[in-house]
Structure formats: C-alpha cells, structure tokens
View 1 (tube, rainbow, N blue to C red):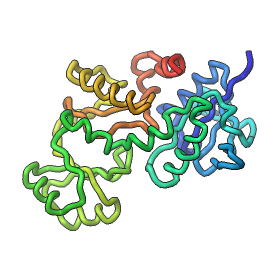
View 2 (view 1 turned 180 degrees about the vertical axis):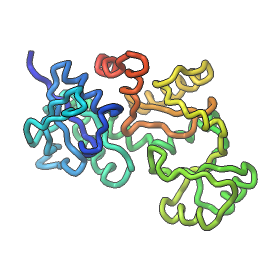
View 3 (view 1 turned 90 degrees about the horizontal axis):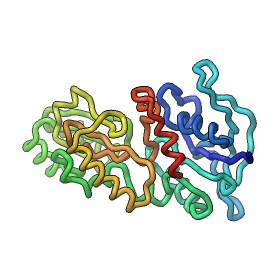
Length: 276
C-alpha cells in the first residue's frame, strides 16, 4: 500500500510527554494507517514561489517510554503533498501563530488541515465563548478599572485569566479588588477575562471527552459543537466546573485523547481519522 503523508505543525519535540500527549497519540494512530509522519515547528514554515513549504523531521513514533521518537531524516516538504496537516502547536496565539494561519490558508483547499487555519483565527479560545455566556458563571472581559472594580464588589472572589494564555498559565484568584496587581496584568496582557470564583473547582474541572458528563453538560456540549461546526472547527475541547462552561474553547491544540484512552480503552484517535 502506498504511503501517505501526515504533516504535523507542532511545538518542540523536546516538550512532548508521550504519556499524555495527544499529538503523539494521533501520530501513532496515523502510522498504523500507513502514514509517514513529517513534523515541523512554526519557525520552519515558509511561503516560497507560491508554495507553502516546511523544513521537517521525518519521524518514527514508538509506544516506548525509553525511545518514543526517532528522527529518520530531514526534508523540506511542499505541504500540499501531505494528505492531512494537523496544526498542533501550543498557544500563545501570537503574531507568529497568526502568520502561520495566513500561510496555510493559501493551501487549505488542496488538503485537509485540522483545525482549519482561517477558523483558528476566527475562533479565539476565550473570546469565542462570548456567544456562550448563558452557560458561564458571571463573566467580564475588560481593562476598564471602574468596570473591574464593580465586578469585584458584586462577586467578591474573582478569577483573572489572560485572553491569550493557555493551560492555566497566569490564571490568578483574587479575594478582593487589588488595583496594583490588576494594572500589572493589564499592562502585560491588555484585555482580561474576569469570572466569579466557583468553589467546586476543588473537585477539579471536566474536559468533556475525558470524564462522563451530566445531561445538563451534554446539552451545552451539543450546542457548543453546533456553533463550532458552523465555524469550520473539526476538533475541540471545552471545560466545565460544576456544570458551568468556564470560557476556554480549546481549538488550537486540544488535548486529552491519550488520557481518555488510558481511562476507558476507547481510542478517539481512531475515530478522529475515521471521520477525516
């Protein structure tokens, strides 16, 4: 059977934890389906003479903790030769990230790119949730100190989240309005997301494809899925605390498939490629 190419735009290979990494898990499944794996970082992507090309490492992936990733060769790949391209590099959604989506948008009609690069620009992970506000705890997005102070006065304990961050980085809980700390955050991040603190976080949050969900969460999940489908997003994850959607719509590099497999024996990577 003729080999197919799976291209993966990812973060540094040195950062991959094969025990939990979804990109690695998807790559293993692709190998089982006769794909060669070509892996590159955003810095390796170029647009030359009308072609999107990437300086790639050709990988052999092994479900082996001691030697999980073997680099077989290096090659510059014209990305339209891939059957599928996965955009899997982690945020921040900075100018470099945006630049890669514009480059890849030029070839999006010639191969399957997941998630679609144009859709990634139009579905910002926290700001997309503005259309889902009825499912969320009290939420403010602002850098206006007067509005922020009013929000604290009403909600007391408040969680602050940078709009462009990910993975819980720089998320802060404040028990009261603290002007200096908030100004420091605004200077660094501009607009911030403020949410009323949900004490049930002590029991953890739910990524919807990891843990059995309640009927209420299923209703919300189906609604979010329909909205994401309209926006041409194929693969996403959302998080709940105590039945409330907490505002992170994970579309840049959704994770959790390997953990889900370890917990259930169900291989969602297989489902992922079946539907491609």
